[in-house]
Amino acid sequence: LPVLAIVGRPNVGKSALVNRILGRREAVVEDTPGVTRDRVTYKAEWNERHFTVVDTGGWEPDARGIDASVAAQAEVAVDLADAVLFVVDANVGATATDEHVVRMLRQTNRPVILVANKVDDVRQEPNAAELWSLGLGEPWPVSAVHGRGVADLLDHVLTILPEISAVAKEEVGGPRRVAIIGRPNVGKSSLLNKAAGEERVVVNDLAGTTRDPVDEQVEIAGKVWRFVDTAGIRRRVNLSQGADFYASLRTSAALEKAEVAVVVLDVTEPVSVQDLKIIDLVLESGRALVLAYNKWDLLDDERRIYLEREIEQDLSHVAWAPRVNISAKTGRHLEKLVPALETALESWDTRIPTGKFNALLAELTAEHPHPVRGGKQPRILFGTQASSRPPTFVLFTTGFLDPQYRRFITRRLREIFGFEGTPINVNMRVRE
Ligand code: GDP
Image (cartoon, rainbow, N blue to C red; front, top):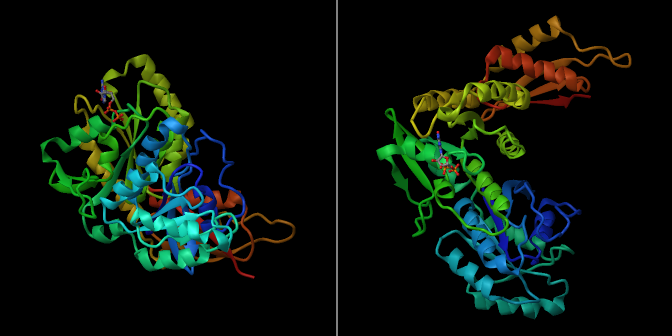
């Protein structure tokens, strides 16, 4: 999907605008300064066009941190987005921070739409007009809170946003796209360096800008891979606050562009909440997944027993993901990463022919019919694979299936087809 990023200083109304775009009334979060939020990307729809909205405003810094954090937001937005909404508070006017961000945005040729927010009333429109001075063209006056002007803005956005993401378009049939993600210090950049070795080919930013390269293309064992958003791994930003939110933006950005994610875990430390959140982001994004257990050279026997137990308990929901036990430092088992990636991608791409799928459903339901509920027994009429990447199935039924029964179907699909390395979805449509 094409990506629209929302950028701007704290308190200009980014979250309110995101809510408007998503058609929700409630706020994404309470506007509490300093509160971090994990959620960064949202699926949006306008006039039957679908796109992804990236809200960079999940963390509102104090005065000291503003420049650094807004610059970091802008940087991520530009790496990721097909178009940027730059939001300014029309009643405050352009500040030095705004001007700084505008300079960054203009170094790229991503389209930037200037939004003059908080124009609640026609009498405030002259304030919006003053924002021509930013040199971003016509300011779009809106009131995110009241909804004024937002429909016109979105109509305009759709004329600018490409039908499909520039990244996806460029990459059809190209090298497969891999995101290396994980919490700080697990060894992402070491892994990247070791895997890339001498073969590293830097890929320039798609928009052809002068900024740091965003992706790197690497040949491993005769095959070219594209590691996405490596700038996010190599570039160390020093944020006094908001580092977690920045990291989560980076992870979402990388996932948005990737087809498969390598989640790097540090075997010397217990699986943490942060590790699990990162895995959740992968599941939510629907990307293929490989788990890389790094720093294997530091593992002793005692820790090893705990590790296996942790994996069994905490990571049972992703037991289907291929696992590689590596050392980015010594190079141990790095060669196993490629087959793991290939397996995961193959599963992610899988299409099960409709005939085969229905024959299987018939077998499953004969062997294990849905229990009778309130005198009724919902039946599965037929099913089809609606899409791949990841495999998504739709079951047409005569009534709602128990969650338990759906899990049974999902489990059996996995047992039969494997789907090693990919999430799968089983949806249901009730036919009246
Ligand atoms: P990142 O923040 O995830 O990119 O982590 P880095 O790649 O910067 O690694 C963090 C630290 O762990 C560095 O000091 C690395 O040298 C070290 N490290 C990374 N991988 C390994 C490994 O496999 N074994 C050992 N012993 N140290 C490692």
